[in-house]
Image (tube, rainbow, N blue to C red; front, top):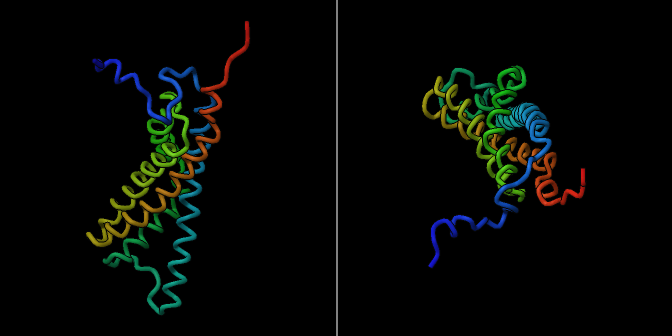
Length: 186
């Protein structure tokens, strides 16, 4: 006969211990990851916006679709907002640090050492933050434009978030910190 208390003590495969000790370098990793999020979203926005404009030029379509409605107009709006992300760093960096701190920043304290949860939750929260912001501004062009802005912003945010999850995991190194034995006497 198994009680609920005994079954709840079983750990998932990616956790090392039920009560990990104090984890170091979390604040440093959050700061570096939030700056990396801001810069990577900006760089991806510029690159994909340039590629989209290049494709439009090759196909003979018009240039920027500012003020127009439609899915591609929304995609362009999302890419433009992502490219201008760095100019609002005083808002985006603290927002990214808060989102990372409340999501993947808590994983080492829970004893989670595997890389995949950091990548997955970083991508999810990156897509929510960037995709949600571009979606709101995409509504100015209508529902189709909002959907296009959500897709482009969500894709960029997901990629940037996965990169930030990887960066945070490498800086904190939870597997090394949580499994090393402390041999100090004093």
